[in-house]
Image (cartoon, rainbow, N blue to C red; front, top):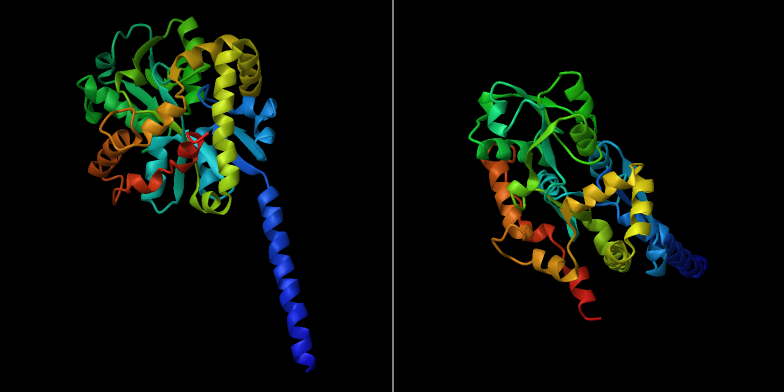
Length: 328
């Protein structure tokens, strides 16, 4: 009888422990990583203007200068989610990861550029010279290779160097490279010293699309929090376009770049609204569709032998949080 009487209190303790654990987990901040990129910066508006809080979600934004550092932290489980390039999320899932894309941050036009020496007039002039990208088999690598291919150059026609996007100006000044892939604030700094833009992401529509991706486990465990994040991003986007001056101040301060560089960076991307976000999640061959661009990127990497298998793009995209907002 003693054993029977003890059994129910033990069950109660276990139930209370699990319940308390779940409540603590629900209140734990969701950590989102990012690098220095103007297209992500309106996330800081959501933080600094209390938009996350208004939508009942606690978010910690983790900024790194090095894009590969954020990616590494995300892969290692140190971050719940990441503002990142879609092509890298495809690679991550193809290698066994479980990421869910819930929001499209921006499409790069003149935001991502290949900057070259003053004497160069086009990408074709890079034959026999050195060009840099950030990270082997990364979105940067894909962008550079496809841009060169469009210019009629093959990989054997050039030398390649792995250089952080934020260090491209320094590498050019030291004579280590003849051209390199980068973005603001490096672009403005380089142009002011006479360097030229030889190519941009807009020349290859859809090649660089930035998204918010989260670990699939956190998406399933905390859907209300993810809903709050998606809603907050749309509201922060609205603030960016309706309160430009204050928005630029918040964003430039967060990324530690000046307002002119931030303005130029934002002008170099297209930041989609709710309707465009929902369209991006639909099956289409358009470059604005994550299906269309995703299939192209997966094919490119697979044909180069960088992926042993092509991931199912459908399983990467999670449109339900965007779709739910159309009901309101």
